[in-house]
Length: 405
Image 1 (cartoon, rainbow, N blue to C red):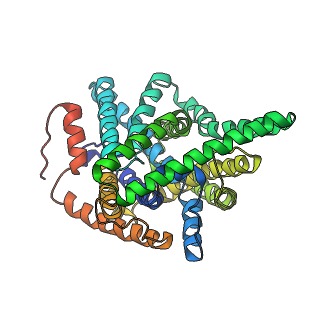
Image 2: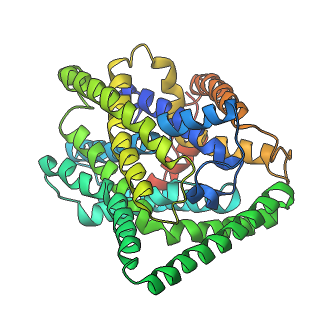
Image 3: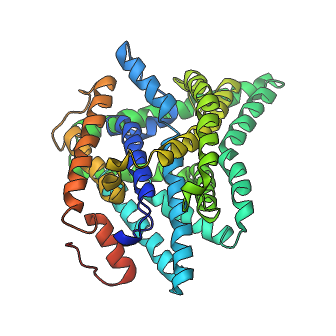
């Protein structure tokens, strides 16, 4: 989220604009999983969609899903590099402070995941952050983006290996039948768990939902090795964007941003729509050549479009300055999105589970984000930090900065 949290006079405002833009994309993607059990994420689009709901779902999958978490991840990596550079220039401690920040972020994420919503990304960011500083603490700047690419595409390689293994098993019909039977049994068990989760979210108490979120947390952490490599790769790209000067002095690199805006949109958009078409109803539990190809196209599009979005917003940062307040308190806004919408949707709150069509979700996300823009501007007109940012900073530095302006 707002990784650097530097004083207002030292802020790079275009980074806040980028965070604000990414926050909107994250909400568009997450809204589906406020209304569906998280474990259904491996089974593709919601069954039974028709008409405008199909169109809304397809647009979000093509233009947002897998494109905004890379952008947020790049900004997280950029925040790490920016914080390290400023600590070095000021000759202030860094590593101890940064490790505390990651630990606190992990605690925030775990609390968010268990108490509010299981789709949390903060815990994954915290754990991946430790992997980054363990493996790439002193990696030269010129190698950062080169290391990033293998990690970003590692899940694609795994999917292709799984598809190849299934095809190879056809050489032994009995072994193939046993393998397919095992996949079918695993899928049936998984679907039963999804149905149980849906019933709890729709009608269960808050305590029952906490129990379900603990199960979801185990699901997320079990697949941590699968989620982590791409996040780590985008962390490294974000670091490279800072140490290369592209995000600290964007006015000197306008040609680079223009090139990646054009490349990302011209190549990334067709690949994104093709990938979304191939994976729209795909069962990711069954690695097939078609699923692997769709995932490949989606991964390439995710990299290209996230860079295109970053370049477009950076070039237009002055015109998009109204996004900056939301980005400056991105952590608070991220937590507020899940806190408010799970309360409205889940049975222990307002009980809207099952009553929000996919197209309406898109409209509600846009309206809610507009409200967050207004509230963020109002809040930062009176206070120096968002509430979650203030708490994170206070615990990191073991002192409470003044809150009011």
